[in-house]
Amino acid sequence: MKKFLLSAAALFLLVTGSFAQKIGTKDAKVAFDATSSVENIKAVNNSGQVVVNTSSGDVAARVLIKNFIFKQSLMQEHFNENYMESTKFPNSTLKGKISNLSDVKFGTDGTYKAKITGTLEMHGVTKNIEVPATITVKGDKTTFKSDFKIACADYNIAIPSLVADKVAKEVKISIEGALSNQ
Image 1: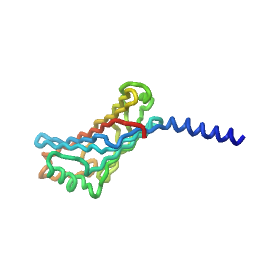
Image 2: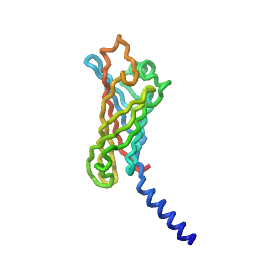
Image 3: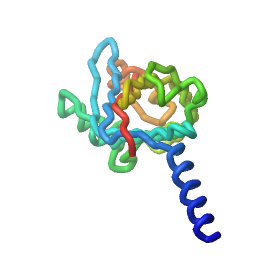
C-alpha cells in the first residue's frame, strides 16, 4: 500500500508539474521612445526579464532602470539622475495575467494576440494597466512582444518646464524576447 501511495504521489507531482510550465528570458530587449518634435530621445536595455506561466497565464517582467543605454551619455545621466531617479527607484516591474489565455495555444505553432491585465510599477508608482502582446510559437521557440504607451505624469516623472517641449508627454515602450523553459 505504501508503494502504491508513493507511486501515486510521484505521478501526481510529475503530471501537475508538467502543466505549470514557466518560460522566460533574462535578456529581453526593452526600448523606450520619448521623442518629441524637437528632440530624438530613445534608449534600449537588453537585460529585461520576462517570465510567463503557460498554464496560469501569469506574466512578470522586470527591468533595471540604470541599464538603459542612450546614444548621448548626457541624456543617460539626466535620465537616471533627474527623471527616473534610478538610485531611489532601481527597477520597473509589470505583473499581470494573460486575460485571454484560452486564445493562446503555447503548444501549437502560430501567432497569438494576447491581452495582459495587471500593474506597472515605475518610479515608485503602481498603476493598473492593460497591454497588448504578440506571442509567436514556432517549434520549440516562443517569442514575446508588447508595445504600449505610458504618460510620464501618471508615474510622477517630472519634466522641467525648461525642457518640456523636448520630451514627449507619452512614452512608447517596447518589450520583446525569445522565451525558453525556466
